[in-house]
Length: 311
Image (cartoon, rainbow, N blue to C red; front, top):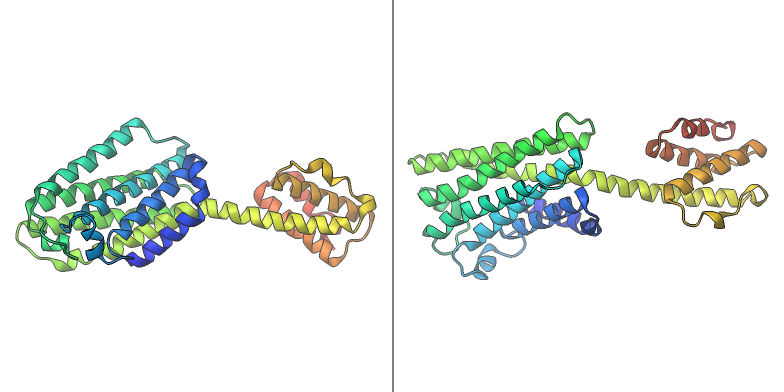
């Protein structure tokens, strides 16, 4: 599960790397992907945990680094969701809150006796009160952020928002489960079946939130590519009727959407003068369908219903 989550986050981060300089939700979600992939790297998904921890002294410091990076990733996810819902940028209070929480769970980690590198560090040290404090602060903050994501997206209708909200619920439940497990261990019980619930819930939630937040920019990119294809098809169709086509040099600086719209209107006008071929009719229908999804204005819809397009 951890490896699948790492691959998904790493691929999404690479695909969306240009978004980091654009500001807004794009840069926030890219930072979430990068820090999330970094956190999963720290659990030994790519390089063995023993090797990674040896880089930092071999005393399970990698666990702290993993949780710091995971906290940053989840915080960036939360800020992305908030930005998508309200357009607001992270408030100074949220930044201070994040910093205080990281310091708060780092202190008990430094104080506790950690021992040498251990693949099951949390479970092996679960009876230690300092471990309980360290992990519980981290998990409680994650649960708090999941509530923020859930509330920020409200009842928004696009399905990707629903996917993000389901992921937030899974991660929030996983965080509570982990606190319950750690508390039980501190008081002497060993409900290992409770601890076993954490990974599938937590990492499934990460995948759902990452995919949901990445859906919108990836969908925009897909629409841009589809419009570019439609634009090329319309140019090719219009080129077969040079006497009826205006000079394309006057439109060299137009956006892909505006250019495709102009070409579609142009080809529809051509269809009122001469009979379009089957391929030209298909190109016009394909382009107007994309334009109706992009800019559902009445004149675009009427254009798709011209006699030439409906033959």
